Image (cartoon, rainbow, N blue to C red):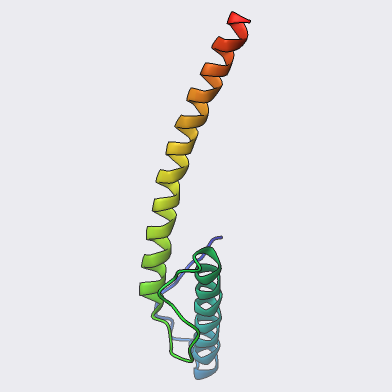
Length: 93
């Protein structure tokens, strides 16, 4: 997933484009929130009509991503170890 935010100030912005950008941000926040809920059923977020802070959501998603990356590295090391053991056992056979 790739998300780009642009905080540049453009003199051609109108209230329509501003409203459109706000709707896009709400849609992105809702989508990220749903992804976060689906990825972790014990999430601190519960169904509610409350606005979810995009910065908090992104921070939580970043933390989860980093945790999964560390877990993936550990599992990759275990896999390499098991493959080495398998190769040694095949040589002995």
